[in-house]
Image 1 (cartoon, one colour):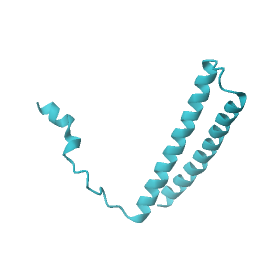
Image 2: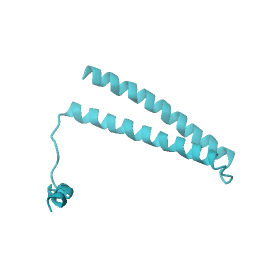
Image 3: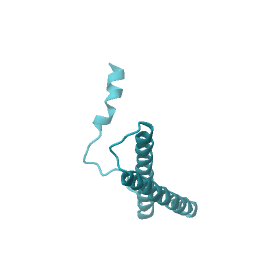
Image 4: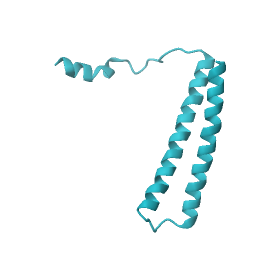
Length: 94
C-alpha cells in the first residue's frame, strides 16, 4: 500500500499553485534554455524523419520534400548552435 501512495504523490499538489518565484533574469534564462531544447528537439525530429524516409526508401515524398526537410535541419542546426553559444555565454556571465 505504501508503494501505491508514492506512485500518486504528484496528485497531492494543488494545480493552482504558481510554482517557484524566480527573479526576472532567471526567468528569462530559463525561457532561453527551454527554447534551445525545443529547437534542438525539432531539429532532431527533422533529421530522424529524413533518415527513416531514406532508409525505408519512401517513394511518395518528392525531391522537393527532401530539400525542405534538409533546409529545416540546417536552419535548426544553425539556430541550435547560435542559441547554444549565446545561452552558454549568458550563463557564464550570470
